[in-house]
Length: 203
Image (cartoon, rainbow, N blue to C red; front, side):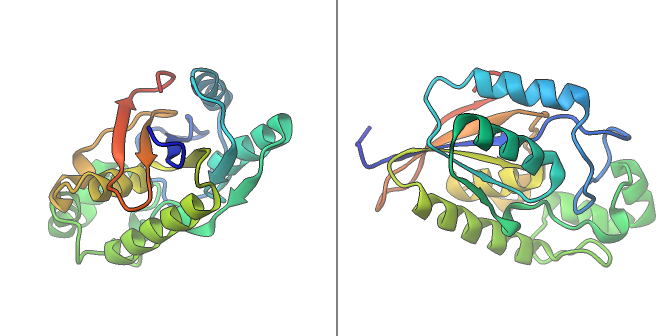
């Protein structure tokens, strides 16, 4: 790998307080005790020293990011556009409940998200554009080092779909567990390389 390449480890937040398996987008729910343990274990499993941190501003990401940055004396970028999509009327519903409320729209959002929008939520296309722009901005600040990006499953699915040139119809078929993640090698002028895609605590 070239010395000018940047390693980017993208990690999902750990388990949060409250109900499981709900569409938790803009809701600012804190990590549970288990979630803190998951993220500490995932960070401890990293095999390359981190040189900078970028994080969603939502508490389930930013609380760990701020604690880690202080502990490790690392620069921290709380980037507003790394937050999860706003699910609007689907916020805090289970997928089954969201599907029951909006059968055709929810099915389209899951299988062909481009051009769709959760009811009273954020259009998927706007979400995609801000996430990709945020990735470029964060990468520019950390070129040549190892950037740890703490964010959400939806953000990670957008990044994987774009960076690997996958069809957008596959975006919501990518499962990412709490504290799970992937690593990219990014070199200016070249497409990124996916170095690994692993479950929690195995990056």
